[in-house]
Length: 401
Ligand code: HEM
Image (cartoon, rainbow, N blue to C red; front, side, top):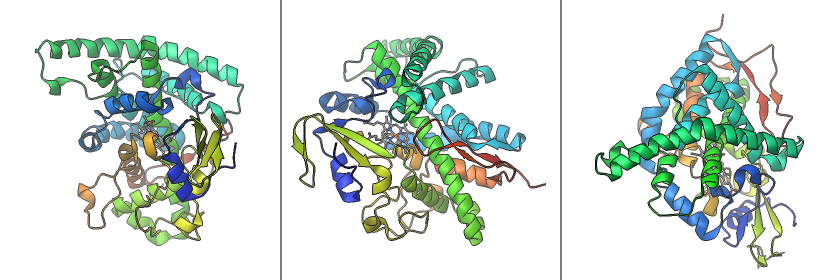
């Protein structure tokens, strides 16, 4: 294995290199075997092409405007009633509702018990995706993931399949219009218009992966963003009001925080065949190539001398994304990026027409409700993973008494 790549341009080109396949999830096969982010070549292209039918731009806009606000309001009301609590836990609840919807998992009961069960399953799946960074006994974690998959399948996935299949059958018999079909990943996979090969056990893992891919990344990005905004306001109190009034500025903060804190600090690839990296370094077949996303995102030659610091007023030239490589590039580039991060605004764009992304929307609502650090309880990093994520982030919310 060669040294991790920290040069931004080299990292970008390496992520686009087609003879390098996914290498980050070898440890987590119990959940990740055969899921989109772990596929390569034609199989990946076919699955991504099918799933892209859901992730169209008009879908993100519809979701952000029509579906998400109500779901978010219910979660925030509960948080405000309690006067605050753990922001990580709040993030899990807010994002879980979102991802369960577009993945296509029904919640027939809508009870607290059902929410808690889904949260527990989500946390177990999250352990499966990050097994390569786990500090726990990895075999114990694998068993926990297997148990969670079985429970998820019986209680949630199979009933969701049955309901959708009945609707699809009605549509195919000509008794329903296409618009009446649910707009989610599960429906697209069951209709399988492109006739891709998708065995039942792979469908189970794909759905669990979607559930966790959308939620876990966004949760950690949310908590990092809020933390960076708290720190920024300490040193730039003049921006407090701007953060309340200007959603585009909040989005800049979210993108800048995502640059500094990519959900996965590294991407890994394995060579399909003996090859050369874009800098001509030779790589053997099956050799692991590590792309240091966090390091590349702090490359001073691209982001300036203060690249290690949070600066939402950073001025970037050319096509460099404000969030750097945090959403990946190339064939595995994040399919949900516009949903989570929105679209980078053209300078003349009015905030009202702009797609902000779910993380910015959540931060906006939290700020509107006067979220602030809990002075009596310090935040703590998550000690169960080598990933630098917050494990507990106590905040207060609502009017100050
Ligand atoms: C802040 C939020 C998010 C971050 C930082 C993030 C980050 C990433 C990154 C870095 C990759 C590429 C992995 C690689 O190259 O190995 C990726 C892929 C992916 N992401 Fe996201 N993601 C986020 C939100 C979402 C959401 C909301 C969804 C679902 C709607 C999602 C679904 C996926 C999927 C399915 C892939 C695999 C794509 C493929 O392999 O073709 N992500 N994400």
